[in-house]
Image 1: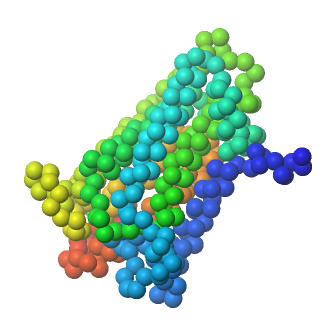
Image 2: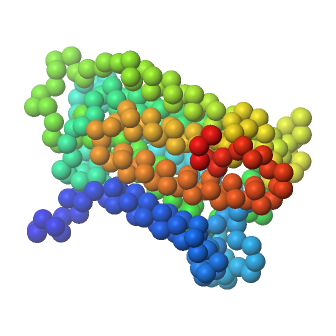
Image 3: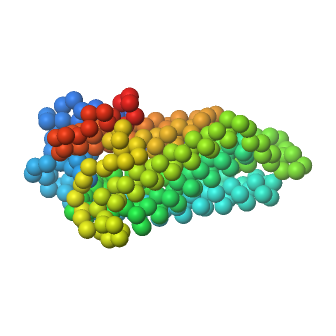
Amino acid sequence: MIPWFDIRSINLINFLFVNLIVTVVVLGGLLATIEKHLPTAIRQTFRYGKHALKGTPDRLVSLLEVPKAWFKHFYIFAALWALAGLGVMMETYMTGKPAPDYVIAFLDTMATNRRMVRTTPTETLIAMTLITMQCLRRFYETWFVQVFSNKLKINLSAYLVGYIHYFGTIVAILSQAEGFTRTGPVSLPTNGYRFEVTVPLGLAIGVFYYAWYHQYRSNVILANLRKDKTGKVVSQKHSLPTGDYFEVVSSPHMFFEIVMYVVLFGVLRRNSSMAYVLLWVVSNQLMNSWLTHQWYVENFPNYPKQRKALVPYIL
């Protein structure tokens, strides 16, 4: 077979994330500059939730919309997929043997069979544990904390992107880990894999937990805007959030999402695929936070001027 016809020589995960990045940057840039000149179909596809398109919708695009509450679905997938990845990683490192051949074959298909070992067992263990914590917490929030409006819709493409993101992130983390490639050390140490936690890794865990906790607080604040003191849902309208980091930024949950992925990138900095994951998260959260900030300013005449869109005191 001619080499360039071998699909396993292509990093499909990197390809997916690059396409997501290009799409959100291009469409986001068009919305920010010449939105009023864009076709309704494009504007309606990109906008959703509280900053959805105003006016007459495109009929074809409307057929491709699903309830925003369906966000809950891909967090079931994310939680299960992360737990599966964590389980395989723990089994591999506890037994001191390479990952099962079917796992390596799967990674060869998704992230090329030319993968090299770039991250240590310690780095992989930390990253997989942190992303699993995030997926489990988001599962809990979407099913038991957040209140979704039964009127709001999202485009089917936005819904599917959620699955792609979590699928790709877990694959990216494991794709260049020791024990998960066909190339690497000629032989393993007699005592299996080595684990060495350093001060920088310890600090990274601390920063991740801080962001993880405050993202949770932000989502609780948003949910409580639609509940009474007993926790009963009494409204589905959007209100002005206050408290915690909402005092300085319009979308602290999006800001802390970026912080967590910056930490993951820092832990796995030698993993080339994580750069694409981080760029995707930053570009996506940046555009969504800009649309959200714009919506708040337009709908609340006395919106606090000190609040930035995404990064406290800066952006």
